[in-house]
Amino acid sequence: MIKPPAKPEPAEKEASYQEQLAEMTRHLETVRDLPGLDKFRQTHELPRAFFEHFNAFLACYDRLIDFALKFSGDHEQIRCKKGCANCCIDLVRGLTTPEIINIYHHVRPWPDAKQIFEYHRDSAEQFSYILLNKVQPGESPPDGRDPRILEAHMEFNLLKRPCGFLDQETGCCRIYPVRPVACRYFFSFDPPETCTPSHEKYFERQTRTVHLPEKIHTLLREIDHAFGFRPLNFLSGAFCQFTAELMRIKLITVVPENNRE
Ligand code: SF4
Ligand code: SF4
Image (cartoon, rainbow, N blue to C red; front, top):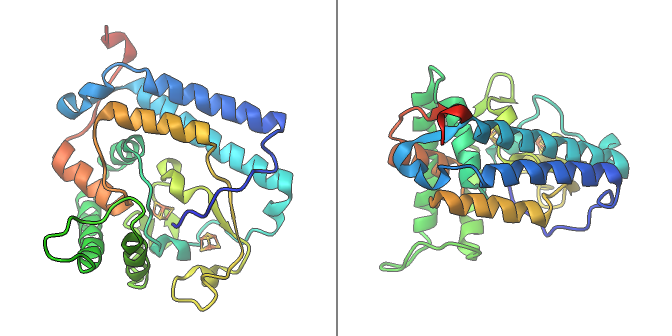
C-alpha cells in the first residue's frame, strides 16, 4: 500500500485520541525495554510480554483509528467492510521487525504454514524479478525512495496476485489481529472495484488514512534497531527472509517472565 504524505489528524487534540496514544506509547516502551531482543537472532526466544504488549499496541491503534474516523465523521462514507479485499493484491510495503516476528509467531503453528511460506516466496521472487529488471548490470539493487521501487510495486500489482495471508474464499485476512500497520490505516470512500490497481479510477479514488503518530514510528524504529535485523521492506520478502534465513522454520520459544533474570 502506497503511503501518501501524512496530514494533521482532526482528532489529535482530543482526550480520547491522546489516551490511546499514551497507551500505545506505554506498550511499545515496554517492548523496547524487554531483555533479550538483541540476542533473539541467536536464541530465537522472546518473553511472553513481547507478544502481549505488541498486540495490545496494535489493538490500541485500531481503537485510535476508530475514534479518529468517528470524530471526523468519515466513518459514514467509508466503503471498506469485512470480506472486501481488492486492496489485498496491493504489495504491502513498510514492515518492521516486531511486526514480522508477530506474524511469523501467529502463522508458524498452522498446518498450511509451509504452503503459505512457499506462496510468499514466489511473490517475493516475482517482485524481485520486476525490480532487478530495472537495474543496470553491476548496479546495487535500489532501496529507500528510489522511484524504481514504486514502478516495480505498480507492475507487481498488475499481476493481481493476492497477498498470501488472504483467504481467497471468504475475502478475509487470515492474520487480521496481527496484520501489519500498513494494512490498518487506509480506507476508501469510493466503491471497492476502484481499489483494483488496473481500474481506471484507481489513482483518482477518494481515500482516507489514519497514520501512526511520529512518536510511535520512532519507538518502532528503536525496537527494530534493538533486534539488529533488517527485514526486506515488503511483506512477502520480509516474511520469507525471516522464515528462511533467521528462523529456519523453527518455532519461536516464548519465555515466561519469571524464567528470566
Ligand atoms: S480499500 Fe477498497 S478494497 Fe480495500 S477494504 Fe476498502 S473498499 Fe475494500
Ligand atoms: S496481511 Fe491481510 S490485510 Fe494485509 S494485504 Fe495481506 S490479507 Fe490483506
